[in-house]
Image (tube, rainbow, N blue to C red; front, side, top):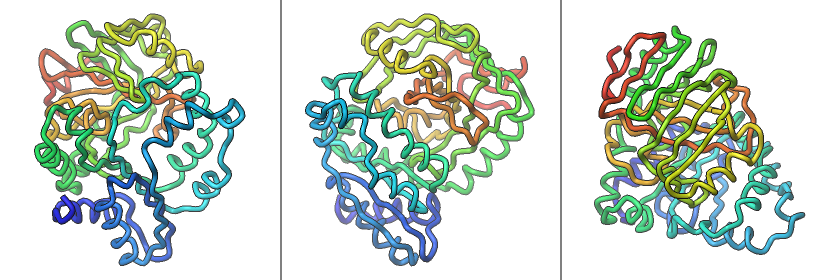
Length: 356
C-alpha cells in the first residue's frame, strides 16, 4: 500500500481541506508507525504549504502499559508538554492505525476514567481552539473488525474519504437551515420512541473538517429535555470494549435505566463516570452513503447514511451544548428499515432517506 496514489489524495484532503494549512502555521501530525505512508505524505504537503509540521510517532502498546503500571498520581497528572503544545499549535492531524483494536479490553475502567478526566484541559483546548482532524489508515486489525480482507477494507476506506466534500458541504448547509427552524426531534423505530428538544441549538454540518471520513450533521440536545426510550441494534465500542443490545430510558434528560445483552456492567460503569455521563451531549444524523455497513469503528459507523447517533456525555460548546463530562460515547441507531425522524411533528426522514 506504500505507493498507493489514494494515500496522497487523502493527505491532500487532510492538509488543504480539513485543516487548511497556511504559511507559518504550526501543525502537529500524530500517529503510530503503522501509518507511516500517510503521515509522511501529510508532512511533505504541510512543508509545501509553508507550514511548520511537528511529527509525533506513537506506539500502540504505550497506553495499555500506562494503565497497568501508573500510580494514582501518574494517572491524574496533566503532561505540561502536551498542554503547551495544545496551547501553541494552529492545527492537528491525528492518524489512527490500530494493530490491535482490543488492546485496552482488560484495562481498569476506573483508571481509564481518571486519565480522561486529567486530560480534559488538553482535549478541550484542541476541540475548541485548534483546527483538528482525525483520520484512519487501513490496517489488518481494522479490516478484521469489519470482517473484510485488507485490500477490501482499503477500498472501503478510500471510497468513504476521497469524495467531493464541497458538494457534501452544500447539501448539509441546506439541511442545516431546515433543522435550525425546528425545536423538537422525535426518533421512532422498533423498540425506540425518543424525543429531544433542540431549539436554539446550532446544527453543525460535518463535511470533512474534523473527521475523515465525515458526513453528518449534529447538535447538542437541550440537557434536561430528553424523554423516552431507545434500543441500539449495533454494538457500541468504547475504550476497546464492546457492548451489545443497549437499551436506555430517559426522563428529564437523564438516563434513569440502562441494560445491555453483553457488557452491562461496563455500560453502567461508564455512565457513572461523572454526572454528565448520564445525559446526552450530541445527536447526529449520518449522511455519508458511501458507508453502508457497520465496521465496529465509530469514525465510520456514525457517518453511515440512514442512521442517527446519540452521544452520552460531553457536548460541543460551539453547538450551544452545556453538558460537561469526561465521557463522549457515540451509539448508533439504524433507521434504514422501519425508522423515521420527525421535526416538530413533521416527517423529515423515512427509512433513512431525507424527505426535505
